[in-house]
Length: 73
Image 1: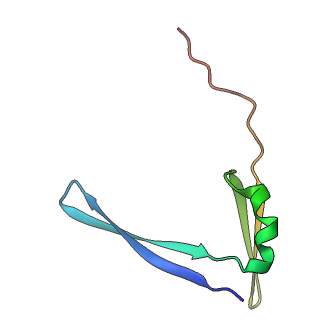
Image 2 (image 1 turned 90 degrees about the vertical axis):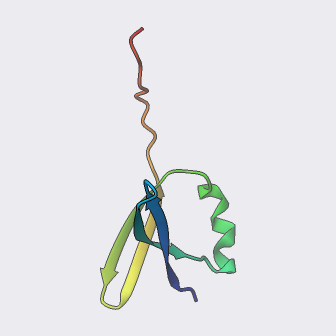
């Protein structure tokens, strides 16, 4: 069992205004830890679907873009 957690991040904007936004996180139960190392430090695409009272989150590695930026000198 796991829970989706919500916390608020507060940042100052030019030391005048306070900007606040929500950050959501999900902790994975220990029984799934063996699957996670293959995805560490990689860009992931996220797809979320809601079906009735279920929430399905699908994480897939992003396809690498082989077109590198080149600059004219």
